[in-house]
Structures are given as C-alpha cells and as structure tokens.
Length: 239
Image 1 (spheres, rainbow, N blue to C red):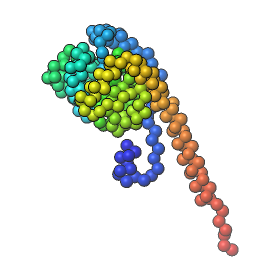
Image 2 (tube, rainbow, N blue to C red):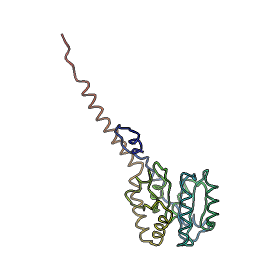
Image 3 (cartoon, helix red, strand yellow):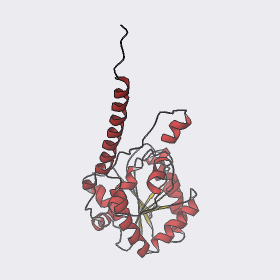
Image 4 (cartoon, rainbow, N blue to C red):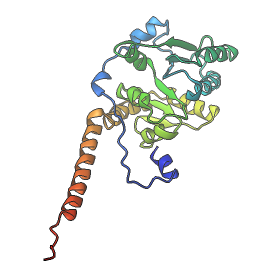
C-alpha cells in the first residue's frame, strides 16, 4: 500500500506498521480431532485454506492446482474454511474437476475453537489471493506451526519475503502444485518450516507492532518539539 501511495504521488514520509496478531489467541488447537470429525485418516495429506470465499481470493486457482496435485498424490485433500459470495461457484468448480473426494468445504468456524483445530489439521496452509493488504491468515497459520505455501502479492509479499516458515510458489497452477508436492513428501522440511513459522509469526505479534507504533510516536514528538523550539525563539522588538 505504501508503494501504491507513492505511485499516486504522495511524498509525505510514511512508516509501515502492520496490524499484528494477538498471539495468545493462536495456541493449542487439535488437528487430529478436526480430521476425525471430517472422516479424514490421520496419515492422509491435508492442505488447509482459510478466508472469505470471494472471487478476488483466487480460490479457483487452488482448486485447479489441487486437480494437478492429485495426479501426483491421489489421496490429498483440501479443507476450505470460510463463507462468501463465491462459495457456490467454488463447489460447482470442484464438482466439475472431479474433486468430490479431495475437497471439504467446512464453512465458517468459531475462532476460539474449531478454527484453531482446522489450522492444526493441515500439513500445509495454501493461499493464492492477489488482493490482500496484509494476509493475516498466513500469520495465524504460522503462529500455530502450519507451514505456508503461497503466491506473493501485495501484503502477502511482505510476510513471505523472509521465507521463514513459508515457501513462495509460482503464480501458475502446475508450479504451485509442484512446490506443494515436494513439501508433502518431505516431512523433515515441514517440521523445520513449522518451527520457523512460529518464530516468524512472533515478529508480527500485536505486542511487537505496538512497540513499533510507540517508536513512531516518539520520533514524531521529538521532531515536532524540535520544530516548536525553533519557531519559539525570542524575537528582538524594535524600540
């Protein structure tokens, strides 16, 4: 968004301070319980996507990617959590692609319970939205130790550029599927990414962002006080 403002011609100094996430809310979760409730075997490879089901979220891309991935890993399943205006369209697309046994649309989940279980149920969190200003769901997944595979656009690029706990995938369905396949076949790398993900999410905590905000206020106040001191210097009066 800063880049977009600069392209609009804004020259005022800008400091980027993301929203951050409340880390204490993203602990625990029971992935095995969530899988069991959906009838998904414990050894079955599971991808998770969480978000509003709208056309701009690019869920179509993930479904077409899944169809390609299934050619390599036949029993892979994608859990799609969320609701929105494109939900019916996505369900119809999944049916046309023959993915009835490979997709679970689970709707809206309670953020204090089921959502945590859903994140933890995934071997990999997948995301392909091109319109995110921040991509907080990536951080939520990472905070719970679920590795992320995502394209990098707008706000998601800021989160992913460190490539800690996450892998940036190509913006094409086969390339994305190839990245996910390699990760699903490499449990050691997934464990390493999971550890990194928790550390990376902590860097984006609400507490860390608050400290950055305080630092910004201190800088602005110091600059302003300097301007006030300069403008309030006594002037000689003419007699």
